[in-house]
Image 1 (tube, rainbow, N blue to C red):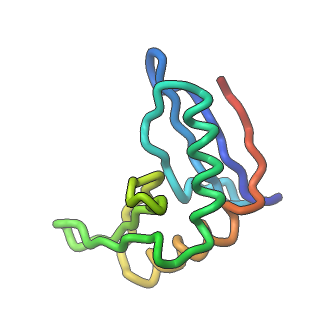
Image 2 (tube, rainbow, N blue to C red):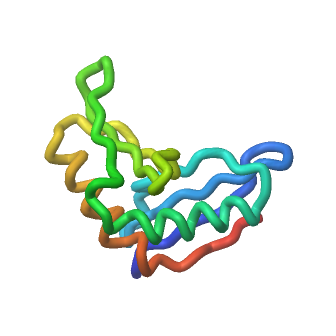
Image 3 (cartoon, rainbow, N blue to C red):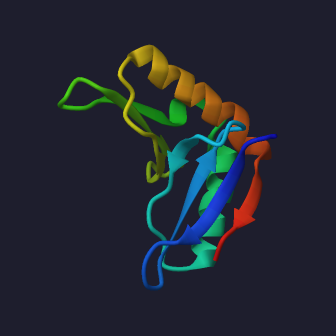
Length: 110
Protein backbone atom coordinates (compact mmCIF):
# COMPACT_ATOMS: atom_id res chain seq x y z
CA UNK A 1 0.00 0.00 0.00
CA UNK A 2 1.32 3.43 -0.89
CA UNK A 3 0.94 6.61 1.12
CA UNK A 4 -2.27 8.61 0.84
CA UNK A 5 -3.79 11.97 1.60
CA UNK A 6 -7.03 11.91 3.58
CA UNK A 7 -9.25 15.00 3.29
CA UNK A 8 -11.89 15.30 6.00
CA UNK A 9 -14.20 17.85 7.62
CA UNK A 10 -12.80 19.73 10.62
CA UNK A 11 -15.76 21.50 12.11
CA UNK A 12 -18.31 23.74 10.47
CA UNK A 13 -17.22 24.76 6.97
CA UNK A 14 -13.59 23.77 7.54
CA UNK A 15 -11.42 21.01 6.13
CA UNK A 16 -8.09 19.41 6.95
CA UNK A 17 -5.96 16.74 5.34
CA UNK A 18 -3.45 14.25 6.66
CA UNK A 19 -0.69 12.53 4.74
CA UNK A 20 -0.43 8.93 5.83
CA UNK A 21 2.52 6.63 5.19
CA UNK A 22 2.03 3.18 3.70
CA UNK A 23 1.67 1.75 7.22
CA UNK A 24 -1.26 4.11 7.92
CA UNK A 25 0.67 6.38 10.30
CA UNK A 26 -0.02 10.11 9.95
CA UNK A 27 3.21 11.83 8.90
CA UNK A 28 1.91 15.32 8.07
CA UNK A 29 -1.14 17.34 9.15
CA UNK A 30 -2.37 20.34 7.19
CA UNK A 31 -3.55 23.70 8.37
CA UNK A 32 -7.32 24.34 8.44
CA UNK A 33 -8.96 25.32 5.15
CA UNK A 34 -12.27 27.13 4.61
CA UNK A 35 -13.26 25.03 1.60
CA UNK A 36 -12.69 21.56 0.21
CA UNK A 37 -11.18 23.12 -2.92
CA UNK A 38 -8.63 24.99 -0.83
CA UNK A 39 -7.72 21.72 0.94
CA UNK A 40 -7.29 20.04 -2.45
CA UNK A 41 -4.98 22.88 -3.49
CA UNK A 42 -3.06 22.31 -0.26
CA UNK A 43 -2.59 18.65 -1.20
CA UNK A 44 -1.15 19.73 -4.56
CA UNK A 45 1.17 22.17 -2.81
CA UNK A 46 2.45 19.39 -0.54
CA UNK A 47 3.05 17.15 -3.57
CA UNK A 48 5.02 19.93 -5.26
CA UNK A 49 7.07 21.04 -2.24
CA UNK A 50 7.64 17.73 -0.41
CA UNK A 51 10.66 16.60 -2.48
CA UNK A 52 12.57 19.84 -1.73
CA UNK A 53 14.67 19.62 1.44
CA UNK A 54 14.91 23.41 1.71
CA UNK A 55 11.12 23.59 2.21
CA UNK A 56 11.37 21.86 5.62
CA UNK A 57 11.77 23.95 8.74
CA UNK A 58 13.23 21.80 11.48
CA UNK A 59 12.34 22.84 15.03
CA UNK A 60 12.99 21.87 18.63
CA UNK A 61 10.04 22.16 21.01
CA UNK A 62 10.36 23.57 24.53
CA UNK A 63 10.10 20.03 25.91
CA UNK A 64 13.21 18.93 23.95
CA UNK A 65 11.33 17.02 21.28
CA UNK A 66 11.62 17.73 17.57
CA UNK A 67 9.17 18.50 14.77
CA UNK A 68 9.09 20.02 11.32
CA UNK A 69 6.94 22.23 9.14
CA UNK A 70 6.68 21.93 5.38
CA UNK A 71 6.48 25.34 3.71
CA UNK A 72 5.49 26.47 0.25
CA UNK A 73 7.71 28.71 -1.88
CA UNK A 74 5.96 31.76 -0.33
CA UNK A 75 7.07 30.51 3.13
CA UNK A 76 3.50 29.68 4.19
CA UNK A 77 3.20 26.52 6.31
CA UNK A 78 1.27 23.82 4.44
CA UNK A 79 1.80 20.95 6.86
CA UNK A 80 3.26 20.03 10.24
CA UNK A 81 4.62 16.85 11.74
CA UNK A 82 4.01 15.18 15.05
CA UNK A 83 6.57 15.49 17.85
CA UNK A 84 9.58 13.17 17.70
CA UNK A 85 11.84 12.20 20.59
CA UNK A 86 15.06 12.42 18.53
CA UNK A 87 16.42 14.45 15.62
CA UNK A 88 17.01 11.20 13.74
CA UNK A 89 13.33 10.24 14.06
CA UNK A 90 12.34 13.70 12.80
CA UNK A 91 14.66 13.34 9.80
CA UNK A 92 13.13 9.92 9.10
CA UNK A 93 9.71 11.62 9.15
CA UNK A 94 10.89 14.15 6.59
CA UNK A 95 12.22 11.37 4.36
CA UNK A 96 8.85 9.62 4.63
CA UNK A 97 6.99 12.78 3.53
CA UNK A 98 9.45 13.26 0.66
CA UNK A 99 8.89 9.66 -0.44
CA UNK A 100 5.13 9.39 0.03
CA UNK A 101 3.67 12.77 -0.92
CA UNK A 102 4.45 13.10 -4.64
CA UNK A 103 2.52 9.99 -5.71
CA UNK A 104 0.03 9.63 -2.85
CA UNK A 105 -3.61 9.07 -3.79
CA UNK A 106 -6.37 11.16 -2.22
CA UNK A 107 -9.10 9.67 -0.05
CA UNK A 108 -11.98 12.12 0.36
CA UNK A 109 -13.99 11.63 3.57
CA UNK A 110 -16.15 14.74 3.14
